[in-house]
Length: 207
Image (cartoon, rainbow, N blue to C red):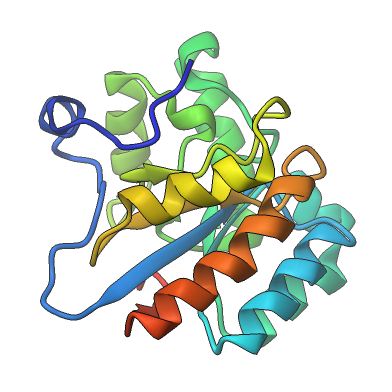
């Protein structure tokens, strides 16, 4: 069970987290979690390049260590980088010290104030620990979830999820993972085409 559009109540319960960007321009903030990996990340980079779209990639530290060439391609293409822990830890099921240490292990490689908790699951104390360890941290959530990670979701439904719920300032989640590949490779170019014609820009999150 997951929500495509983040409810206002959840945003109110966690006001210290960033859910969307309130600003006058027509920007959409595309984000990609779980990479970088071969094939999927490079395919997404090629799609983004076709639409002159910049995005933010929340990278798993272990994947960066395994695929430094793909990570370099992400940064060379001008996309922003975020920390997604070193081993994709779920905060609710991880003790606080282990969670912080895993974040710091990834931070040594990524060195970015942008952070997204895997699965969107993080404890209040973990938030405080991260803020103490890195005072400039910006914990990025989302207001539109594509559902591309759902293997039972048809690609057309994934596309509909983002087109139906997006608005100016939305932070939209996709994944550059093998699990999401069938849906993201279908939905992303079609969404970019629609949004481009509607006059949207595609902006990275600025650290």
